[in-house]
Image (cartoon, rainbow, N blue to C red):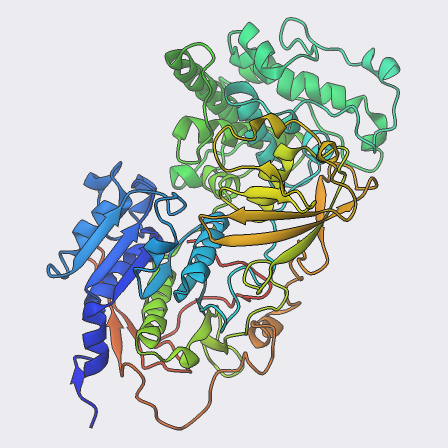
Length: 634
């Protein structure tokens, strides 16, 4: 007869009290997860998170209260969780998991690692560290009503990087600067504008009309004469945006007329752009100001919650003026040469982007958006839902219990559905896929082919754009396989800095050359085959070809397909229908996310799950395919 300690088998309960687990992230999922772990019986927990608590976290990260704003998430989470179980041994680190101090030996101290992260770079890093340490990793993520959990074990399952992930969507510069057609185009433009005026200027984030737009086949000399730029209100001289703004003292009226009147008039001279598009309508500050004492015709008084209101044109003009004055004061306080960094949680910065984006939307005949909508889109935010986080955190612990029990073969990737599938299941478990033979991370001998122009690609670009950004290395060392072992890049500070500005061809690298890149922190080696090409598309620095695709496959065409082939295999995506009873590591668990500091208690009951976990009750959540999508953000 099976002996139980609470809801767990006796031997499992004993294992929980001695095993050490690492939780990476103490945000939306992390808070729920830490509480679940101690209530389940885990006694030795270490948690790491670099973030501090923000007011916007309080609606779902229930371990935090208003008095904690500005403090370390990891430290406060530890203190709050100890109230649930004072006998637990919890260590908190207010630090980045990518700090070299947390090396392979650090990861080998744990029996299990659980990710509760919200960015791909950190996920890639933890994935590699767990592979190097040969420690099981439970990866998870949520996005609104969507959620998923999966288990990663070296040699047995796919790693996080076995399948390509979709890259963040980008837009052509000429679309942003000349012909925006969607609100996101205007929001990106407004963020670029913030940096051009107050932050670090980037030539790739120019906001003035793009005279090199290939679609605008026009004569600049002829049409510029027709662009009647206002010297008193806007001064449309083609100079640095920040330099010109400083010369005006960041005068809101002059900035407004340059951006929303003179630049738009300049765009209108590009006749070809507007043959099949609705032409933009310039705005004039003084004209709008004169109408400000009375409500413009058709403008309705804003109603509802402040952040969900959509103001009129003059309302956004006033917001534009106020935000510029506030940001100008912040710059002055910081001193000469100071720069501001755009942050979605910084009120003046968000006000500026909200106002500038909406004014541009109005000019290009788009429906304006609320401050809440702008924040969501500008910060690449998918609204977080506490219930989804609670469900996913519960599933992480369920999979963790299987790992601790030595039942890795029972582990599954689990997707949370928005609507029940054809089998009326809200939770769809899928069999874990084996490692990808051609994965450039977990293969026995990782190798990729990179197409680039050796005559134009610098050593610094190889290091930053290819090795760090594309392949997720932290501190790469690179040598050329030329028989001499020429060192191209060293992770030792200053050792190879002299090489940074040189081209790869300067070191004899040509078509067919091979490079070996080692990241000793990640215990990771990657062989790179160089494919020289001079016919790359415009603005494309390099391409990864062959067995390491840089584009994810398209998502399934409809919801039913998404449910049935979420794991890339229709058979494996089907939940188990076996009637054979198997006790598994537990018979029933109750996870109750208690909202501290409020009179409400939300209880989420998750029934017995081994292969086919089912959710008790009806929840509005959606299916998310692991093969065609990255882990969802928290």
